[in-house]
Length: 361
Image (cartoon, rainbow, N blue to C red; front, top):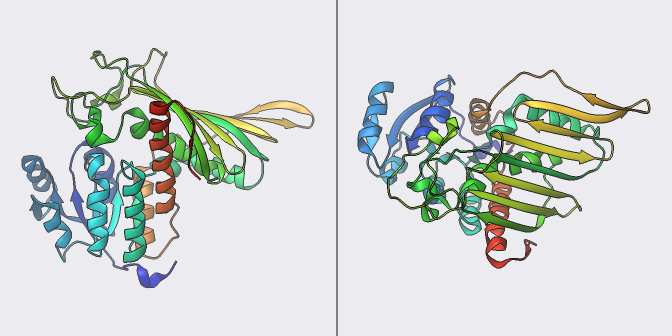
């Protein structure tokens, strides 16, 4: 990394745009836990919520316009936690103003906006990182190393997903309004598991995608998922996104990946999963439970690694971002990977609409 492009400070001054649940539950404690980070400003369309959070945490500045926060000389890093539509808009503006950016996923709601983000980061020389917290779990680090050491051989196919029985977030609000969210569980949950699977595989380039989407539970208000509490519900609001998506991705090395994501479907339990199959071994990861399937001395064996249980890596992800900004680490995530991710997600929606495979190359 060209350290001339990073800002080396003893304490990074963080300005936050969007103080909803994802910020309060994931980003806020992560920033507060790092000795080199200080939240100095917040901005939200809900001024009461922004002021309340500022008062609770001794944050000096509360803005009503994110442009004013971005323009402040007292802000080094902009943390973007808005509805999905504004991720790229705020991120690009912040990068162009000379700020580093840490953005909540997804990167953007369409490939053009994701490209704008990547180009703005390159032009500005500032660090742009989008939340990829699942890469920072102990089990993910183990699997990435396991693959890099060659223990799986050639990884040629797999499947991944995140399914819920009932867990639609913010029903009627921005989560279920396509103009603001870009989609339903595919863009909300799929980004997590697709990214993790591809990262463990060694980041092969996607070349073609097909998929289908379904909306079958818009009239169902049951909830059995803690994640269904995210977002603010709006009675009589909009629900024009899918509640289940399936897909199939082809990569430039010949490998393939199936996927399934749902906010609501008639399954036994909610679960996150990845299964990858290689010529030397395979694995199944369901929530935090990992099993390896291999051969040892001519015998088929199931191996259960003893790893720390960790439901997420938000703190590690944000701490890694700080290290990158301070020139102490090379980024695990780069914006070009975000562009590929949004191409995949949007191509699945396009495939579902047109009924055919979509080429990405």
